[in-house]
Length: 473
Image 1 (cartoon, rainbow, N blue to C red):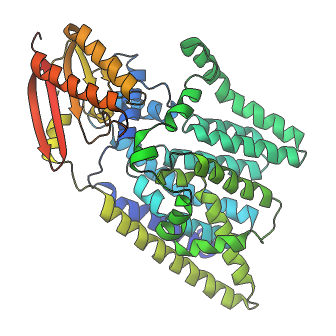
Image 2: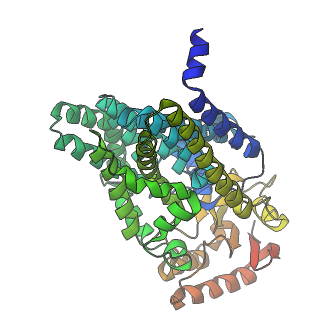
Image 3: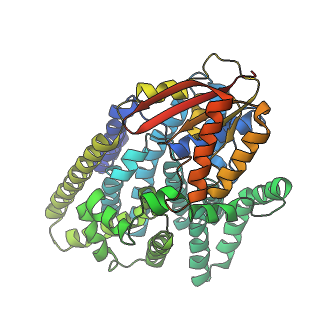
C-alpha cells in the first residue's frame, strides 16, 4: 500500500523521470562524435593516470572531469568511453529530479514538476548529454549544492560548489552568489559552513597550483585570457550579445517566456534564484566568446522561474480538479514542445559517423610502435591513441605559437617522429588578419613535405588530413 500510495502521489514526476531515461537510452548506443574539448579531457585524464607517460596536458582546464575519464580509461582501457556515458545519463536523470526537489522547496510541488518537465526536455541538455563535456556534471553539482543549501546544509553546498568549480571554472560565480545571499540574510553560521565545505576541495587545488605552477590560481587566470582570444567563438562563430535570449526562446522551449511572470512569485529564496540567473547571464553576455554550451550555466534558473510562473497561472483557478487537469496538460505541452525541439536539433546536428577519411587519420597510430615525439593539431587524437601527445595549437594558435612550433620543428626535428595536421579541427586556423600565422603555416607544411615522409593524405569536401613521419625513425 505504501508503494502504491507513493506512485499515486508522485505519478507525474515518475513519468517525467522515466521518459527522460528512455529518451536518452533510445539514442545512447548511436555513434556520437568525440569533440575537441572531450578529446582534451580524455587526454588530460590519461596524462594524470599514467603520470605523464600518455595523453596530453592543458593547464587552463579544471581537473575533475579528466580524472573521471582517466579513471575509466585505467580500469577499462578497451571501452573507457562507455562508463562516463552511463554516468552522464545518470547525472541527467538526477538533475531532473534535483530541480524538482528545488522547485518544490522554493515554490511548490506544482512548480517543481513543471520545472522538471522543462529540464527533462531541454534541447541543449539532451544534445550535450552524449558528448562527455563538462556541462552535464557541472549542472548536477550546482543543483545538488543548491538542494543542500535550501535544506540548511551549507557545508555540503560549499563542498559541491567547489567540485563544480573544479569541473568548470565559471561555476565559481555560484559560490560567490551563495556567499552573498547568505551574507544578505545575515546567516553567518551558514557562511562558515559554506566556506569550510568549499575549502575541503579548494585547499588541495590551491596547494597543487603552488607546487606545480608557483601560482595559487594555477591556470585559472590564463584560462580567462585564452577564452577571450579563442578564434572559434570570438571570430569564426562570433555571436551577438542577445544570443542566449535567442537560444532560450527559440531553441529551448517557447513556454520559457513565462519565466518573466515567475519573478512575481515570491519566496524566501527569490533573491537567490534571481541572482543565480542574472549574474551568470551577464557574465556570459559580456564574455566575447559566446557559445551555446554556456546556456547550461543559467538555464536551470530560467526554468525554475518558468515553473513558478506557470504555477501562478494554475493557482488562478479555484477548483482542485481544474488545477490537476491544467497541470497535466501543461506538463504534456511543455514536454511535447521541448522534446520535439530537442529531437529535431539532435537529428540536424549530430554526425551519423566519422568519415572514413577522419577515421583513418585518428586511427593511424593503431598497432604502431612510437619511440619519438608525436605532435598534433587536434587533441581528439588522444581518444584514439595511448601515446604522449604534444600540442601544436596550444594555448591559442596565432603568429607567436606558430613561430614557436616552426622553430622547434626546424631545430629539433630529430626528436619528432609523427606530426598530425588537419584544417577542420580548428587547431591551425589563423585569424584572418594574422599574416605571420598564415605564412608560418605555409613554411611549416613546406618543411614537412621536404624533410618528413607524408604517410597519410586524405580529404573530404574542404577538410584535409595529413600525417607526417620522420624518415629517421
